[in-house]
Length: 487
Ligand code: NAD
Image (cartoon, rainbow, N blue to C red; front, side, top):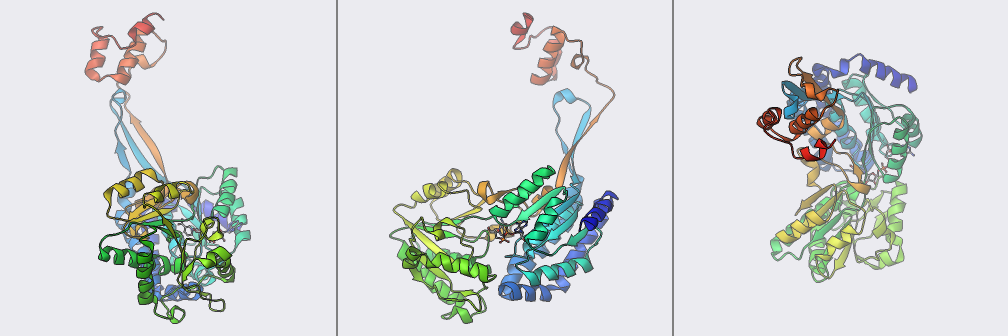
């Protein structure tokens, strides 16, 4: 592995990956891979996670195709950089902000969206002109192995490689020197990544998880309640069975409104997944037995079990957990302390919906907050008084699709951002390039120092050209003249 990594670094240093044509050819290669291997990808997602083909296309293949198209369309513009404004003192100069690739980067990803979470950052890494090693998760083996096969046959293997393995391989990779590590996973492993990166002063992006709340105001119109309930049910149970970093982790609702919301959600669960969800292929499966028993334990916690109002059935052999609703499990129970990452949804009731703001603020900053409300004051307060990676009003998880807004966490939910141009920026260094003329060499910027030079420097920093001229002619004194006159 070390030999391969050092070979990749040499290849990067040859300058090949910096060429616009190389970047375009790799992005096109990835686009072809997605189109030609779509069926295999959908099958692998079914095999590892029981994702329905339509869900898999919606959440992974479809989004990736779009991301590549956006990158291909915008690449030359992104690469061109931009001119920067300069202060007046830098007369007859020009400055540009020029993106340059970081070098050889490591992308470590999670299993819940094995293609999306691996290839979305890879698109940014390639567009920015880097060489990249990708380490997908061992927990989605069919997807990881397909990723390795596809990338090996569609992309330039001197610069882009997949390494398959688990935590041990992760550790070995982290011992290498990288120019950037882009990590998607748990906060616990995020800490390991960050301390390994510190040894080489390597910059990191950490895409972590946490508990994302959805606040549901007592909506007056029954249409709004229906739509809110539908979107909550679909976002929670209809996207990898709640095993998503931006899945709704719990709902906060006013006590009086809770029964209305729960009834509406039950009806939508029935409509979307049928009377017998276990037989319905629209419900994804829990990734493995370890996660299955983790989720089972969350529900088995006695007080949590007492708060069960819907669902709760499980089948370990098929790794199936029914879409489940709990109302007011104790706040100290595991289900309200740990990220759930599965199809269990606690509903927490409050006296007034405004209390939800304090509830959210008293917990670690989430990756996303969702608020279903038409109340503009509540929207404004929710947005300004809480902090989260993103906030969405009246829907959930849709922010992932929008490539014009940054995707990433804050505080405990991670740092750094990607998607669209943000991915390109994440894998680039914005180099400041300044161009000076040999003329206009202001004498007052060089020693020996005199009071007059001091005045002119003050003028240069604080005044416009006319003001500088007046100071030069002795017709104007700078503000702090009297203090420095005593020097
Ligand atoms: P994880 O941290 O266990 O694993 C992530 C990656 O790190 C995998 O590739 C794994 O092989 C590797 N790894 C695990 N242990 C390691 C170690 N000791 N040393 C080196 N590498 C190691 O996370 P997971 O179970 O894959 O994912 C679940 C978590 O990821 C949840 O918290 C979820 O919220 C979060 N997540 C966040 C996002 C996001 O975009 N913010 C997306 C998906 C998942």
